[in-house]
Every structure is written in structure tokens, then in C-alpha cells.
Length: 159
Image (tube, one colour):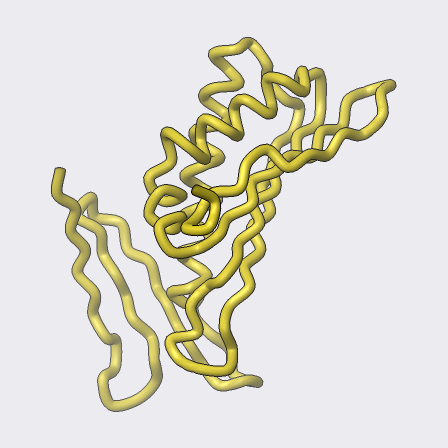
């Protein structure tokens, strides 16, 4: 499988805006501006985190449906820590929290997150080769106590 993207610097003389068009024809504007200025899009590092959230969300939602466990709401929080003292300011740790509400069994939530993190999500697999990623869930069910658990930690130190 081969994927392509064409990135175009909008104005090479000024600014940092880059429009990237995927092989499937979708364009995303990226930007990096000094503090106080208004960007026209997320930074490339933010897009990496968005890609991770989107990839694992699709996996987990699909797995939960197959298990007949459909939450009332589902969101993912992805938080990264990066080196800020030297370039390239790469991520050193990422926490992915799956937040589910509704009648979902804890074992189904745990297993769905685990399968996405360790088997299905290619973005997670690529990042895990160099970054420690903690995959967890927060489950809120009607009439029951809130549950929160770490499911798995992937990355170079997890082996």
C-alpha cells in the first residue's frame, strides 16, 4: 500500500501556512505562528495527535459495535509531553483517554482499547516505535460508580 500527500507552502516569502492535500483529495491547512497571531490551522504536531485520536476512535467504536456495546457518547482526549529544551521537540509521552458514557461493560471497553492500541491502529503502532503511549479509559454508566483504568502502555520501554 502506498499513500501520497502533496504539501504546498502558501506564501514562501511570508508566514508558515502549508496546505497538504492527500491522495484522496482532502486538504488540510497547517500553520505555526508567533504567539499573539491567529493561525489558520493546527500545527503539524497537533495533527499527529488528531490522527492518533481519529485512528483509535474508529477502531474502538467498530469493536464496541461488534460486541453490541454502543455508548451514548464517546470522546477521546490525547495529551502529549514533548521535549521543549532542544529541537526537534519530539513527543516523549502521550496519554490517550477514551471517555465513554452509557451501558458499556468495562471488559468490553478495556478489550476494545487494548485491541486498537496493540493490533489495529497504524498511527499508534508508528508512534509507539519511539514514544511511550498510555492507553486508558474512563467509563460513566447510569447508576454505577465511574470507572477509570490504564489498559496498556506501548512504546520502546514497554517491551
